[in-house]
Image (cartoon, rainbow over all chains, first blue to last red; front, side, top):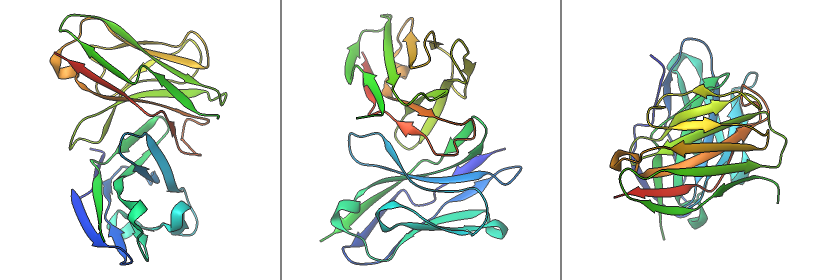
Length: 111
Length: 114
């Protein structure tokens, strides 16, 4: 069965600290991989995507993600978080019209 | 600004009432989607459309109907609302079936069924 797992429901990090959000997936073929961010009361915004090639992809707002085929993972990272990064983050995987979203990780920033 | 517009933003319905949620996009996207978002469950696909006049069922289609009479509009209907349909509904569109450019999302409709 196809699935996306974000094991951390809620993470709190200090402003200026590094961040890593985990995403693991189960999919029959190599899927397209995405990270989205949702600010309170807003829709989802695409942070970055991976289709093929270099397994380290850069996105907007200083985020990056690394695809590890052997671990079926696509973790999101940021070297130094800002208070404005507080939001909910969704990993998504899929192909064609079937994009599956994870249940999300809520990020809080400690001043 | 180009994007996806959802109306209304908020709605309270009584059980058994009907309503239609409207999604409009001005990016000439072929593909449009309706998702519902519930706490701890991420987004689940209700219905989608790969072009004008076509619709298909997603993961959780029961209790909903959709129509895509015009390329830019995708309507989601609830014929007889139930409390289990209390949720936040998001519309999205994309230029490719694979979502090569990712999805563009609307800002959501918060629906409460009492």
